[in-house]
Structures are given as structure tokens and as C-alpha cells.
Image 1 (cartoon, rainbow, N blue to C red):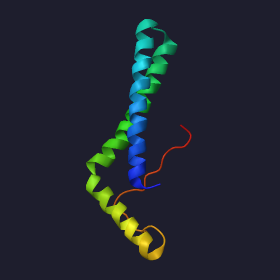
Image 2: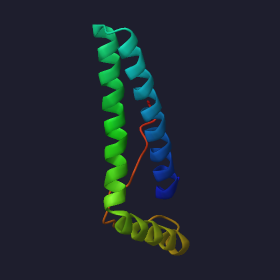
Image 3: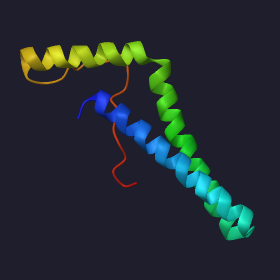
Length: 96
């Protein structure tokens, strides 16, 4: 999976987290309990995590694009991605 695929996945996960947080906020308004508040806080923490990942990419989009291009060129000539990157390799947390 390329960085571009992962960026798309980050966007999708962030959009889902917005929907989940929105649903939790409605539940909290209808039933203001400790459990509903904890659920809302958890959903907001997930949303913050996803948006932070997106912000990192968007703040460094040129560097990510160059690294992706270098990986493609390296794979074409050597069969494996470049060892050097200016940006961290992105990975999706498969447990969520």
C-alpha cells in the first residue's frame, strides 16, 4: 500500500470518526450520564488522533510526495523502496 493509499485511508477514518463523535454527542445530550460522557470523550480522542495524522501529512505534503516518488523510482531500479526518507513511513493501525 502506498502513502497515497494510506492518506486516503486516513481521510476516510477521520470522516468516520467525525460521524461517530457526532452520534456520541447526540447520545450525551439525550442522556447525560457518566457512561455517555466517557463514550463521547473516547470518540473525540479518536477524532483528534485521526485529524492529527492528517495535519502532519498536509503540513508536509511536498516532502511526502517527493518521498513517494523516490520510492517508486527506487522500486523500479532496485526492486525495493528507498532506505532514506525525509518523512516517516505511514502505517495504519489494523486493530481499530
